[in-house]
Image (cartoon, rainbow, N blue to C red):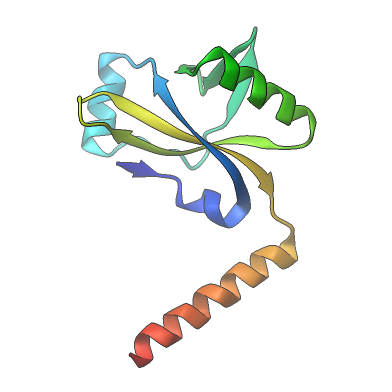
Length: 122
């Protein structure tokens, strides 16, 4: 499982989608070895299809139209996690997200520090 840890800090997640990924053999090998990175990944629409760094994401038409409508409203589509389901197929967890402001990021850091301190005290 590969997770984009930076995404939770930079964005506020609004909605979650599970998408299939069209991968080649080399991509599958990289993911299994853990050498695949999502930190600089981004999603864009090209002719009503969703792509992440030149890899096609497979979603239902209804979900794609919903995502396209929300992109106009200022949201972003963030690839968050790649995982292997119970049938051995790689899936990607994609989130509809809104960027956090600087003060929101500070609040996240503050909450994380308070949680860490309370766990130490226990």
